[in-house]
Image 1 (tube, rainbow, N blue to C red):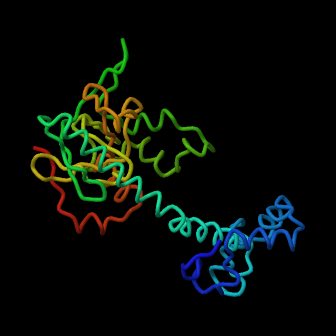
Image 2 (cartoon, rainbow, N blue to C red):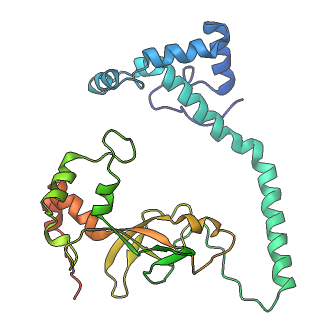
Image 3 (cartoon, rainbow, N blue to C red):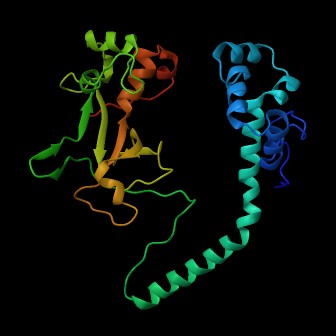
Length: 269
């Protein structure tokens, strides 16, 4: 499999930037086709698989050493092979796009009185809605906010998902939320609202009716998984990180007060 791409890793000679076929040949020649042996040596020797080796390389980077690193060689082959597939699928992609246009045209003619919204893929777009709770099932109610107290409740030391830095725990114990606590003295973490969200929307700003940034969208609730097929207003919610928590982390936890001083913070009346 050949590719017209430039070197798949900076400053590495093309001979070392293996395509998939060359990588297989390399394993055949050097490791007698034994990928288990190849992988074992890669994990044992690569500076990408060991923090100390990686830090040492960063302090004294060397293009020749990088070109010989088995993990770099493997990653380069995967990336190059992936992008080279564009030439293989170009014809079928064009046929699929043409078929999709015919399909949409048929739908519009079949239901000509219906008003369709435009396809906005790969463009900037906005959606609007209201903050609110929801009831996904009988006797089940989810509030529209979560707080730092809930984060602490889920704290599991050493767990890769639920571990917490001691500094955050100390701030919680002292209830040292600064100006970012709500009127009840709680620190709001997330809130939900009945807007649409899909892949690629994470990080989008959430703005209130006055044009103030109040959060950043990052996820949808479990019941929103059907949203790309049918939007259900009573169930589907976008989950956003409250901007007060973002500012709290920057200010109280990270101590980057100089960033806070550069901002114009607007408090709710």
